[in-house]
Amino acid sequence: MMDSSIQKAMAERGLTRRDFLKFCSTMAGALALPRRYSTRIAQALETPKRTPVIWMEFQDCAGCTEALLRASRPTVAEIVLDILSVDYHETIMAASGYRAEEAKKATIDAGGYILVVEGSIPTAENGIYCCIGGRTALDLLSEAASNALAVIAVGHCAAFGGVPRAAPNPTGALGVMDLVTDKPVLNLPGCPYNSVNLTATVVHFLTFGELPAVDDLLRPLFGFGARIHDNCERRGHFDAGDFVQEWGDEGHRKGWCLYKMGCKGPITFHNCPAVRYNDGASWPIGSGHGCIGCSEPDFWEWGAYNVAELQSFAPPTTFAPVQLPEQRIAPASAALMGGLAGLAVGAAGAAAYNSLSKKDKHEEVESAPVEEE
Ligand code: SF4
Image (tube, rainbow, N blue to C red; front, side, top):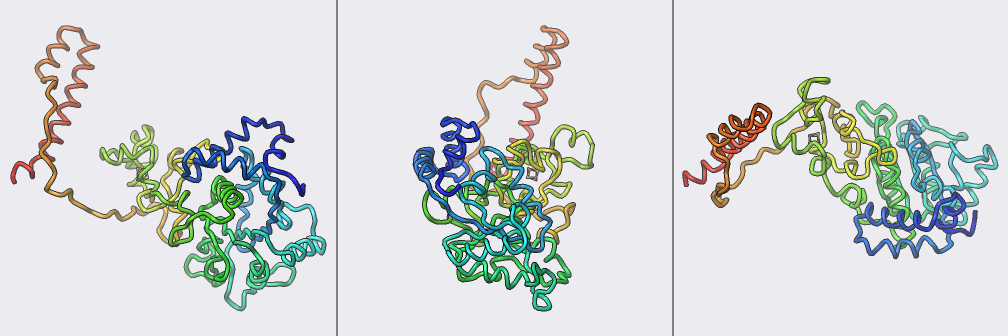
């Protein structure tokens, strides 16, 4: 499909203009852009254009390709396959052998393409641990990157080396950014990466003609600018000190914080809590397992169940004194309500009392240093 827009591709799949505009709005949200940018995104995506893609796989498990193919809404696979058009992808392309290699060479010679890399690149022994068609991954990456507009490393392996790079790293595995230094490189780490972030990156590229702003690890800020811990649905339990102590215990069944089970959310930057996986169905913490930190370098070395180190800090002593609320239910009133309104209401009153008592204790503790001043 050479001359098509994303909207046209969607229409051919029975999706309406409303779906298209919703998609543009979702992308504006994913890119952390103000809502008004959805119009600009729509205008950009309506323009027929084609940006070829070469997708290379090296030392990987193909999990990121699986994540791409499992995507829907409307669909990274559709965007990449129909609009960007993957000219070369060893796993999903129809052509094979010499025809596939010819297609890749023609795309490289023509230039103006995006190179997507999945998997780490072995460098030990001149790269012999990963060869395709008799050529090393090192050689193939160098050739494929030579004429690319930009290189997107998808998954932890391509971004930071992944499992192959874990100690003792027998193959001398490296990530793309260690090897490609003369082209714009963007990392979408994760194990697997989240295909929503590739879609958003592609949409940003098509809309603004450049890759999105990145952090010092070359991760786009829209997807990796905030800690998981700061947006986690279990954060209230962390703050309250409600921790799962053992798999399957009462706290685990109630959805309490997984910090003591090794959750790395406090030291991991990723937008998992917002975009989740599998069309937003769930994500690791949502399904009861702590974050393993798969968007951070060297996470394999951390140990999934080792507790993350937290910075200890004390609040400043210059806060204003805490003001007690005026309309407070006194413990005696709560007891009286319980006596008058019967057992059920009494239980609710007792609960209210307990909660107020707990709050009183908190406030005493918090205000103590202030009072001492
Ligand atoms: S430690 Fe993990 S589970 Fe607990 S609030 Fe932070 S990110 Fe969520």
